[in-house]
Length: 436
Figure (cartoon, one colour):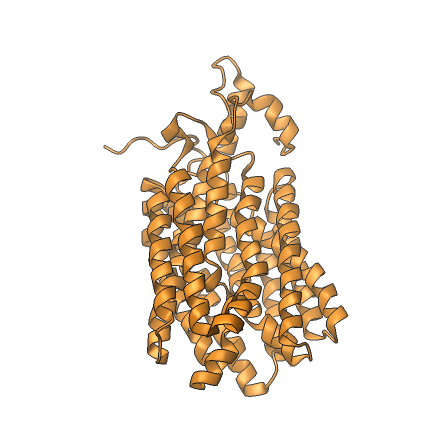
């Protein structure tokens, strides 16, 4: 078995090209694009619950339906998008998505009916799910093999900063300019963070710039050990071939539990904390701590991925997240809430970092868009249902405790399925043959 210790791999794979590897700039650009999506993450939407209810009388379940509608649309376009990302790269897709998201947010400032809110919010949410998230996975998989875990941590840094700062920013904008002005401000964030870095820095693959993944030099023909390690780390699977492996199905249904639970919980955290007696500002401060701890968790997850195959670390972090969800149910006071934020923030951040690299770790980088695109409809259908079910459960029972208990069981189930997913044995390695 090949060592996953980065020092051992580096010693065998060969020297790196001198100078800054462009892949790290790509990772930072994709991270900023994730930060630009902040308006469409669940905790930020929850900040708008009260102002929208006060002005229009819309319930939490009705507002959450816009998020779920966009999630479903994104899920169903992802198979189409994934194949094209494999072929053409993510630069254009990310840049155009940023422009459209910015426009939809600014137009939300003029919404006066629920159908208008659904139409505009769903467009942006669909692009986050069906294009931006998938493009991030494909891009990092193409530019990194050995350092994929650390590059993924950089990308997730943008998303976690969005989780940490987004609710605070939205709350301030609402206080200063009202909810309509807040959406204009969020539209500017999407434009600045999402468009410019990706347009100028993102490219399809390192080979397009005469580079190799991780910035390595071409191994010498005589170095058999170098070539063997490179081959083992760069398997070639088609989407059709992946479908015929047990690992594909176990991973799809195992990781789908993360999507079902995380979307619902992330949307419900702030209202749940308020229901448990915390003020709006205190609840937002807890979310901020939770999200910043998620940055540390993302780094932890990336280091675990550098040293161990992704299967067992991801299963363990899912069980830890289930424990954290149980803690969330019984939070009693602000100190307890901060303790939960630290524990669940770290475990959730590690879980998301590990989950991001699952497709490429199992099936390589050459068809990761197509393979991920096949799993996303199932994952995001559950992800779309989660927030609506949680919101409706609250409207019916007056509490999130019952639905959170069910979600604990789903996380444990997902961890068991992932632990069962052995990596399939590849028979082909390296780049696919040119078409035609």
